[in-house]
Length: 110
Image (tube, rainbow, N blue to C red):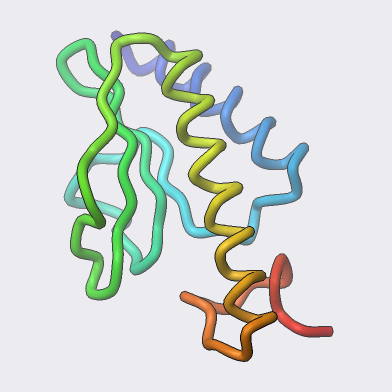
């Protein structure tokens, strides 16, 4: 897949993220695997005809296993689901008087 097509897919994901109001989350869309890494970031990468979705934990280490597929719509759905999970889990942490993974207006107490 060429750069133009990846940029088109990135734009589609950015529009979905914006529609959900998730711009303050930590995520990376089709950036090189070794670049733009943050703690508690969700990533979607593309390599050799496959999409990879995975999260980073503290010290930006890989969290669990990478989800792998060759269909963009499936990858997009999985990626958005993981962003939604990040919001829900951190809201739950706040409700339980625990510290969130990081600060975000999506779950910080008002």
